[in-house]
Length: 595
Image (cartoon, rainbow, N blue to C red; front, side, top):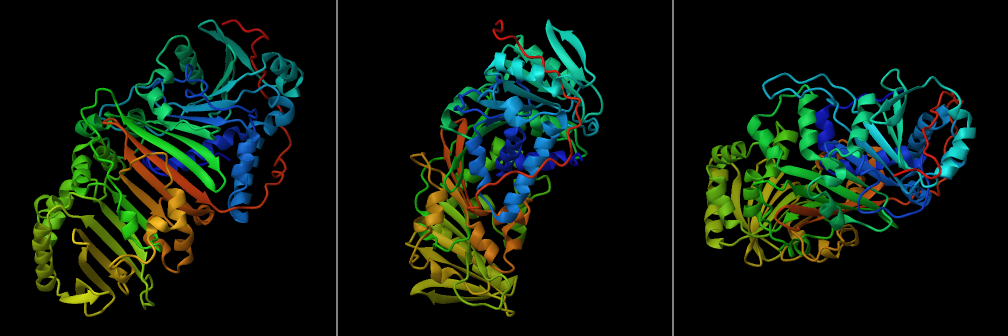
């Protein structure tokens, strides 16, 4: 049964977060039973001269069987069984149902990688203006490019296969290329053409025509501004695959093909300054390494100006930190966020979120505590910062004994002290907190507490120039990092493993100890993770991200996902149904194809 299409906005959110990683793996699963041959990926993926430049997303996947065996070896018994079942269903859909056997009919001739490109649902349809209503949702036309490494063998095998001798197919010519088609429901339609040694399969006639147009000289993926340079920065030996997201095209298509309000022209103009997001994935002994890059268009007025100066925050947080995010300069980060292309993406993805409207956040700070966010707070926050979730070191009656800790290196302690004093006064007079001086591990701090005792706040200083504020649910976590951690996060093996990188300098980290977080009762709701199910989370041990600004138009994110070691992969489930026949008589090239 065909899966229900997710809302377009949810798809975009998954693509622009770690969900992109999940999408890469999911897309690769489609090709697991279609391809199998050794070889490393080149910088440009197979089919880069066939895939149209305005494709929404492009996924290229290695065909080496051992890569997929290694991926199947990760996880819990439950997640492994679910993954194997998904692979079996894809095998049945793409091979078994068409009378094909992988080892017999495909393995001897297919090339070293395959590429899947997802085109706009509005292919051949005019996209409405921002003032006009959106078009109804349609599935994306898809183009798959399979390189034929051995044309003679392919012709020999498939000419004799029962799958090539049945089915109702028609043949037409488009720009001197033979196109074979079987048209029916959207799930059954298929168009196939051979372009030299590349077999191109599309789900709609218009999609195969676009691929042929591109091959004949149209604008191709290979000519996308900045694409080749971006792939050079993230290339990896023996990678599992790569993914490219065409941000402006995806946003434009999503806006035209969903029921959400169409963005204003001003917001659309900002979104168009983002060119793309690309990533490569490599299977490592302990998990998956992703190298990701985000870049702007050549004519973008925006610039990435962040400095790669982040160094100290992991050493100031305790080793038991469950989740953290850090950066190099909070004031600069805020300025770039409110003025740059990144803010437009957040506003589009989270139209109702607090950060989607920086002005509302400013107003909220002003109305709640009477301070100017930019002048009274960010002006003295021109240094490294971190936000972390730390378990309380003592037993507590709170159902979730944790502290949300904010640290920032100050460039002006005098102004900071003045602002913190104002906050103390507001908390005491307006919100009836009890404000009092205290000592923690010999260090002077200020505590805010409510009569109920279930929530408290602690703020103070570390080494003279790092201010901290800890919001506590239960006992305060301040003793775990005052005056310094007995064992720091920087020394934590999971943190070190997931934040390893080839980047010489960085602009901050993200880290989550998923394994430990899931083991804590009543803690899971606090994580606010993307909408992944618990079974997938249980297969994950930890996640780490290291970011760096590599130029004024590119930003790198190196991501490592540590996975649970699973059982040795076995045989996939048997086919769910007997072959139904009716497969394509593949339009294979001759043994010596003409250029």
